[in-house]
Image (cartoon, one colour):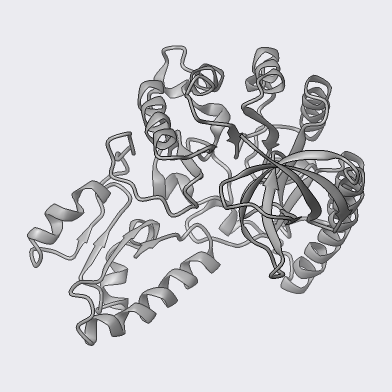
Amino acid sequence: KNTCSFIKDATQEAIETILKLTPYKRKGRCRLLIVSGCLPQRYGKVLEKELPEVDLFVGTGSFQKIPHLIAQMGKKKSYLSGQTFLYNDRTPRILSTPSFTAYLKIAEGCSRTCTFCTVPQIRGPYRSRTIRSVLKEAKNLADQGVRELILIAQDTTAYGEDLRDGTSLEQLLKGLIKVEGLQWIRILYAYPNPARFTESLLELIGQEEKICSYLDLPIQHIDDAMLRRMGRRSKGQEILNLIQRIRASIPGIALRTSLIVGFPGESETQFNALLRFVGEVQFDHLGTFKYSPEEGTPAFRLPNPVPEEVKDERLKILMEAQKKISLKQYRRMVGRNVTALVEGMGQEKASLRGRIQTQAPEIDGCVFLKGKAQPGDWVEARIIQALPYDLVGEIKKTLP
């Protein structure tokens, strides 16, 4: 079982899943129960006492050693070496996504100092893969039939800075657009550092057909005092200026963001400033999270916690506002012809489910399609209806 422990809910879910798996071992349906990833890396040997059913705990720096560790079972139970492991094109991989879509991790770890985040202590400092390694894996994936490539890292815009050889996200994108077979290249988790969004990078995203007209900018908040308490390096006005510059450079681009409500000390006035900002900027997609106090982070010790019921109310208010914005944005698309990637069956037997270029899988909405097509097909569809977070379209034809 590979695990996440980024926040309390993820930790609890991981532990519950592990406990659900223990009967398989007791009944002889599996020989070993191995727990890997962030959970053992964060909590270490404490888990040995709490979860005696587990045979082996493997941290984030020892994935590649698992076969060797199984061979020498019994010597010790936990392997939590430093976070030096860096995934590369030679790392064995089985796609857990549909065959036509794949995530491509371009870097590991994070060197930022956000006060609420556990990633640096779990995953270690930011470490970029080489362009050669990323391009080789991208080609391998394209050869397997992948048509949509989703670039991920804790901060995709920081790609290459640690290599100190001029490597950059822009350079990487210029290499990826040359990979035959790829049709969509999507960028997630682009930290809103204005200096990294150069005019040449924005021009490349705007002009190159393969690069989705879509950016995920996790801003977390807009109030300057909140941003400082969160350890974020951008000010509210800088974030607003960046958004305006991106939209001016790439007309029609879809912007996604993530926000935190209920961070320690967040006043009603500061929350209302965030709410007004969301109304003014009109993000295409927005994810909102309640602040989760995580032991070991600087924010865990901050005074003035926001009551849980206040967090719930602020989350509800923000998402209600975004629901109206999303519906308004989607209504503008009714009557347009779009290119969609068919993913599978929709909610009704007679419909299919797909996505357009401005929708990322799992986190954004989808397009419910009327007509005939197969998963992995590209189709031209006419949008006939807008829902709060989804679209409805009719397939006009299948594209080559």
